[in-house]
Image (cartoon, rainbow, N blue to C red; front, side, top):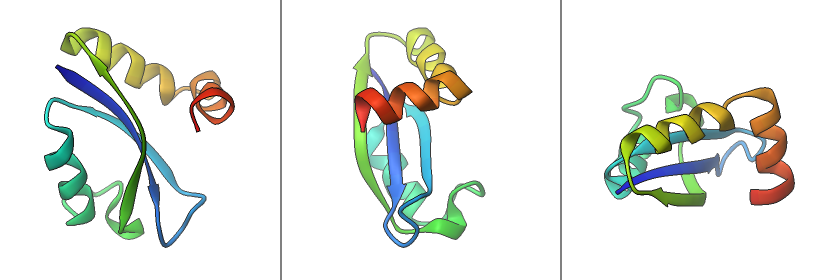
Length: 80
């Protein structure tokens, strides 16, 4: 299984990040440990939404959509 997720910064609540991973628990731990340069300055993070996908291709397609302008609007209206 692959997971697409949205995390929100605890310190800066207006900062959100979406990503995809096969190991969701480890990926969230990596974000909170500052191992991602895109999220390191806004630690700590909390998981606010995730969804499981049967394969990597579909997960990465949905992650790409969530990072688009219309995908961010969809997430704010329907997922968060």
